[in-house]
Image 1: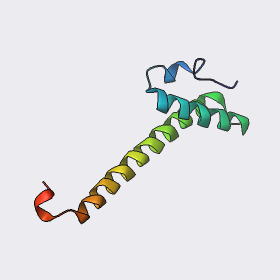
Image 2: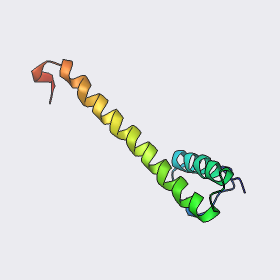
Image 3: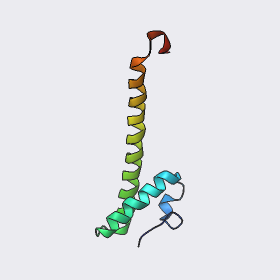
Image 4: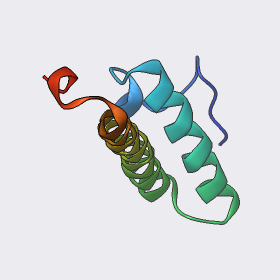
Length: 76
């Protein structure tokens, strides 16, 4: 059963919208590949959280790298 942003597994109820949307996309893809529904829900959530954690991590690294070009007095 494919899910949508207003019709999704109860497990996804309290997630931030951006994570829920990504989890739904991932879980739907897994369902299309024949993965059982309960497994697709769990894996979709795990992958969505990892996806956004990676983006956040990459963004933090990029901000730190930008500081390399600042004068020493400005790096406070």
